[in-house]
Length: 76
Image 1 (cartoon, rainbow, N blue to C red):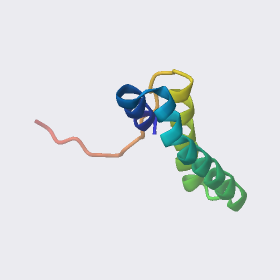
Image 2 (image 1 turned 180 degrees about the horizontal axis):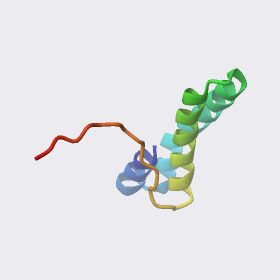
Image 3 (image 1 turned 90 degrees about the vertical axis):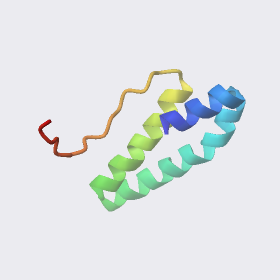
Image 4 (image 1 turned 135 degrees about the vertical axis):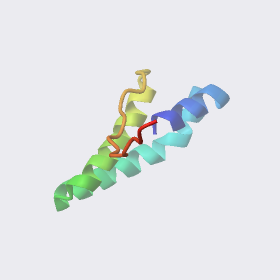
């Protein structure tokens, strides 16, 4: 979500970036709260990461979060 905000800010300006991502932020916030109540840890973490990405981009912080994917690396 950080990159979505950054893309719109870079190509269309900061107001357009806010306009394009404000709904996504509140949608992620709502879903985060729902999954928090339902105690669904994985889904809760996903929507927290989405909120965090938009929020950090909006306040000007750099991208910092990377998912932990368990891919096997083949020997070269």
